[in-house]
Length: 176
Image (cartoon, rainbow, N blue to C red):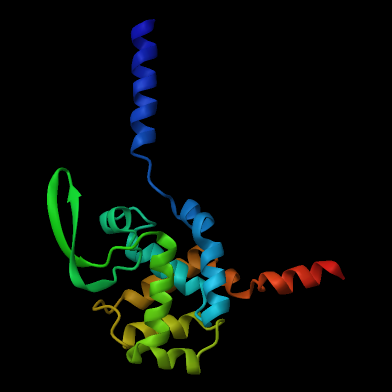
C-alpha cells in the first residue's frame, strides 16, 4: 500500500514539475498586458498575444523561459544562459520580465522605421492588416507566418481583445 501511494505521489509531482503553459493559461496570464499596450500604442492586443503565443510556444520555448523573450527579438550583444548545465550563448535579448518583453515588442513596432508606418495606416481592429504588414516589413522569414498568426487569433477569438475599452472608459460606463 505504501509503495502504491509513493508511486502515485511521485507521478503527480513529476507531471506537475513539467507542466507547461497551455494556450488558454497563457492568454489569461497576459491578455491584460496586451490590452494595456494596445491602448498606449494602437497595436491590436490580438496581434501582441498571437505573435507572443506563436514565437514562444505559449511561453514554453527555451528563450521564453530562460530569457523572458516572448517574441524572438534579437539584441546587439550576446546573452548567456544555461541549458542542462551547458552554457549557451545567443543573440536573443534577455528581459527582466515578460512584461518588459511585451513592451519592447511594441517599441519595435512603433519606433523602428520598417514597422512604424503600420500604425499610421492601420487601426487596432485590423489584425489581418497588421499581421501581413509585419511579415512584409521583414519581421520573419517564413512566408506562412502571417497566416499562422491570423489562425491563432481566429482559433482563440483574440480579436475580441481589440474591442476592450480602456479601464477609465470601463469605469465611466459602469457609473451610469
